[in-house]
Image (cartoon, rainbow, N blue to C red; front, side, top):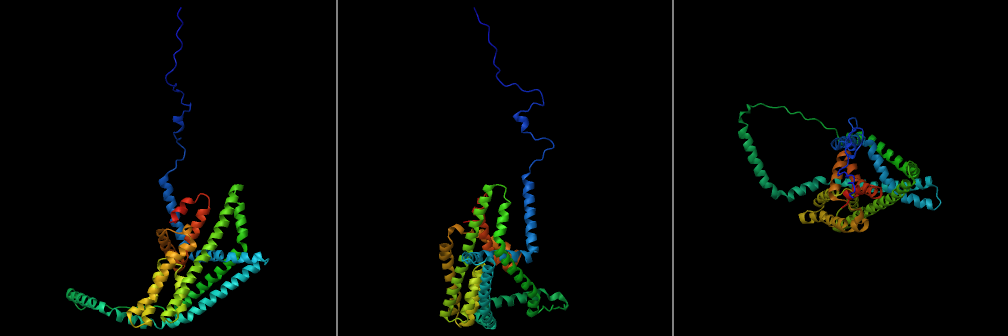
Length: 383
């Protein structure tokens, strides 16, 4: 007796004929009215936003430069304020004491450099004349070439017809007039910077607590507090370390110049310490100034070249040995990023931007290392 054959199993799933039935294929198709992300459009919008931010930073330099400078200085002075607070001194009194001490030291340093700087400015023509005598042997071929070019110009301009052009000379304002015009702006920036430093030191902790309260989750609040505390500690330590290293470089430079018999060694030690905050450009400017000082002080070229040579040796030791040993490789910056930061901040804010470029870039890397989700930026800025 034979059994009836069983039902045949389907070899493929049935295809729905109803257009309202949803399948994975139909779910992946966007609806006609839905918005679609365009990567190219997003990049263009980000580029436009970056250009607008740069333009705003350049226009508002009178406000942004004092703000950033006050932020950096307050980070340097914050450990001293906390130290006084540990000794049961009220915070407002601690801030006032720290700011008065910093102002007295800065005024004494600037006042000690003004007198030697003015006396050196009177010796600049003498040093330039000695430099011209030292390179007079190299100028003779250039004179012959200039004479030949003048003869060629005379031959090619024979058809000028004796036409004479009248030249007008614009009288530029004197240096005193320029200084008087710039004095109100400089005093305004100085007062604004001091007020911002006072506000940051007095109310920085309260501002941090308010920012933490805006975080939605408790875990995020803890991460923000830990990242901010650690970044503030490392920033203050970095700024103090760099300031101490530059001060040591300035002191050793002054000592070496005094041993060589250079006049006003403290002036050039202070110049070397201040300009060393600007990588690449600062040491080159210092070496050029010391070259002029050497030719003003000594008659022989070899003795004159020893003045910038000593500084270059000390600067190389500081850059290759002392700074990596004290600061550490963890805070080392990529040289390309440092050079780009110098170009950008120097273009935006001039000399103040050059002085603040390295501290600001280091601050950005420290915050990126500690802030959640910013490891890519930290790796980009580091070596």
